[in-house]
Image (cartoon, rainbow, N blue to C red; front, side, top):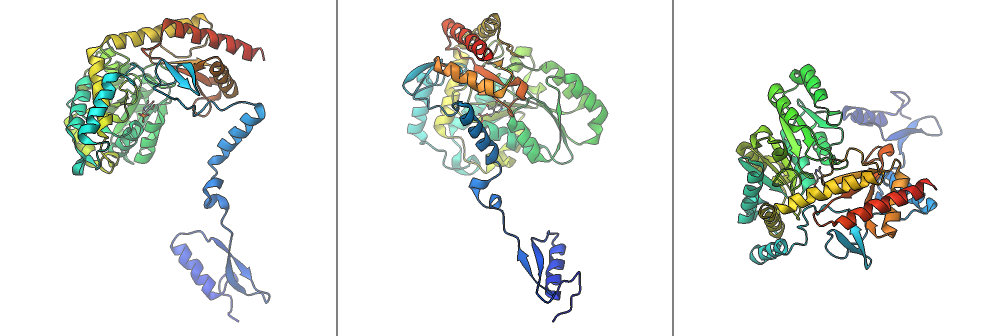
Length: 451
Ligand SMILES: Cc1ncc(COP(=O)(O)O)c(C=O)c1O
């Protein structure tokens, strides 16, 4: 019989425990006693299924609960409708045509013949894939033409195109910022910015929506506690459809010596006399903002994202951003479509004018019908606040039955009391479509409230 030497453990168990302690591991097992009182072995606790079965992952629980609740309340899922053709001002789902307020085809360029033709020509010339990271052998003339066109839109020295808009924010912020830095972002900022900030391990502080004074105060108190500071705002906020007072943020950038980043996903092609975004709207020059971020998936009828800024920034991203360096180059037809869309926007400025006119008309019409449009300013995105998630889903389903496709935005994407329908506007929407959508929304909203 081996004499216990530590808390009743035999020597081999003790040695294992010490080894674990050295490795700073928590023991995954508990000692078991033999019949004569000796500790003989470790009994491995069973590994919970949630730790090795994907179908038992705890992240699935809220989804299952949601599906269960929807089933009990008899609410059909408004998600993953199958669109059978190009989604423009109208769309076809299960053989029925709907008025469509749920896709970001702002300038009606997705489905445009010239954009499709450019993509097809790119396939014929370069194939469907860049087939390598650009840094090694995936670089095509189209990439450079696209980046030049984007840089010219913003009035910057250079630009870099990425294969995904979301990944653009994640990899860029993740690269530029580090543990000694601070990132300040608007409370309503897009998830991709938050993910990038998490990746960077910088200190993250959200500031009240559009509150440049709060940013100024914070920087006055804490700027010197950090090395680099990044302030991030959106051109048009994707859920609320309003925009920041950009010149104030530019002034803060200069006074406090911080980086300023503007995500123009929903403002490029929408704001400014010629659609060049919030910078053009306010007359802010390209070099007054360090990082102009945008997506190619909205006004530009394609897929991907970009950062426009200084030559040094572009070089840094191209040689060091993991989402660029270790990822395939943008597919040639995708780059060609975006480039064709940019050229069309510049050649046909009436598209931008018409989109803005549509946005204004929608806002006025919705208000006339007594709808709560929240912070919406009448641009590419106009919310209709419903006030709770179940009612938002129900209202979306009622509108769907009546031939209108608009998505609900529910908790946790927005606060529960601000659950809403989000209407995306398009240059393709007719006056009649806008009037119908607002009238039917008001009618169904009243019916739902009446129970
Ligand atoms: C503000 C904002 N930034 C970034 C993205 C990500 O862009 P993408 O969908 O092109 O990946 C989105 C997506 O809608 C967005 O709304």
